[in-house]
Length: 259
Image 1 (tube, rainbow, N blue to C red):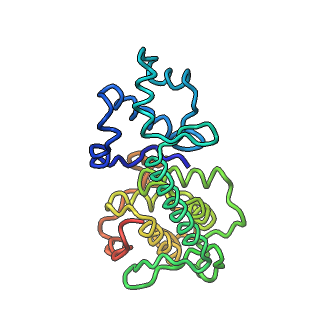
Image 2 (image 1 turned 45 degrees about the vertical axis):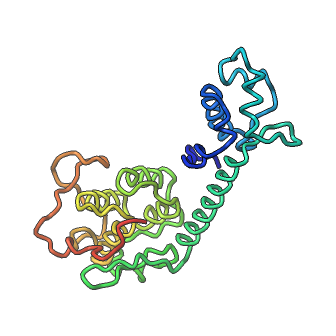
Image 3 (image 1 turned 90 degrees about the horizontal axis):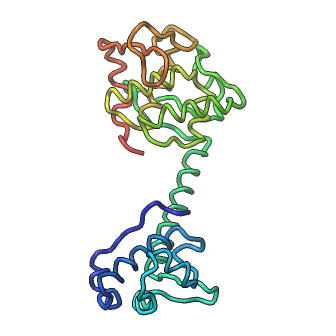
């Protein structure tokens, strides 16, 4: 894992005796070395190679003196590389947090009994678990139950969701591709964006409600047919949202806004 950023503790920098002892040129080079080391493998390290190190900072004439000053804040280890201890500690912290979040996300979306816990007009939204059968979700048979959706369909849904709710967990994109027509997902995303409800739970609540009632219009068991109108940002021609449908306005109320 190489995060595109790292925390910069201003007080630590300004209070570090080794940094304070550097001249202005050395301080700038020290920071530049830290930025380069952040992207190295092993992380937060640089090879003990004068030619390489000098090249990173423009081959200064007084390199020996600068190196002595700068690398007093680094540690040369047995593998022949310089490590910046404080920087490495930050990298390890970020790595641990990333692993914890990844494990939590995987556990959350892999639970077979996962439920959106969204309230639509006082009725619990149907669970969209991949383990559910057609009869569990919709007596009208609105949802699909393909064993494995086509990869291009999953990718299409993930890309459509990106601008509205950010990166979609692959398991969720695959689940939506299995359970619903792509047109339903696009329309649910459009409605969520229009109402400022940019969350997976809100979109999932809309899809679950449509699934229970037989379609977005409550009368079709297949994907909704687009009506004439302006082009939708998700592809094709988007339907106009019916402003007089009080039931739709209540979908997902009470659901957490964020993931």
